[in-house]
Image (cartoon, rainbow, N blue to C red):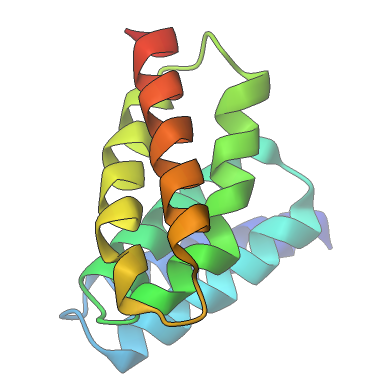
Length: 126
């Protein structure tokens, strides 16, 4: 069954790649992310979240969904300090910070805390 799940994950991502940025592409990325979580494969979980951040949050026009996946990505780079993916996550982090003010439920203090966290991580990772 686990091989089937890997095949499903790969198939969903391949289908998403063939589509323009759209609701359908976003739905495929979300399904792939859910499957990645069932696999307990951290690399697939990371890949699925990066695809989700790019295709759903940025290009898919659902920026509010950053807040559902981004904490996982920050935790991942926090415990994988030698990871090549740090630069990618930090690049997206600046986009998360830039849109936070658009959400009334996010306070000024939360935005300032996130900005300070971003500064700290940028300095820490060079």
